[in-house]
Image (cartoon, rainbow, N blue to C red; front, side, top):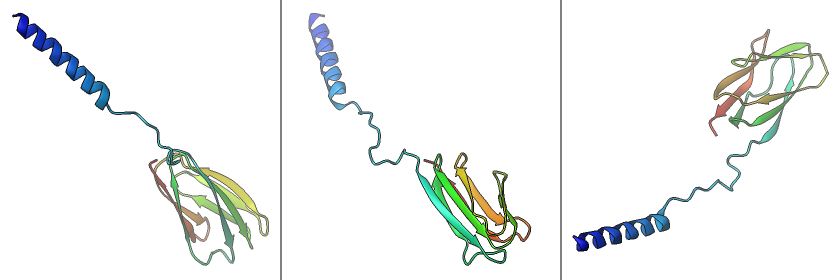
Length: 124
């Protein structure tokens, strides 16, 4: 009986030591992958359109500074987040878009329905 007790205590001691040495270490990434970023994008709308639609790729929590200028009065709409930006001819407008939900959001001139680009938001 005494031999079984000594064996059991040794096994517990060895297993506890192994667990302390080999336990997973909790670390936080140091590469900045969890840090929200802010990036600026500019759209020059001529005659209701732009040369090429942009794809804006963000991660959840990122911020996009969107700058617009148009040669005519226009309204820009971001589908899915119900964001409207009124543009006056020749006047620069800046708005902030914060990525609060994952998905793809079309960015278009409202009346002409010309697509300026897409905002793609990915999980962090």
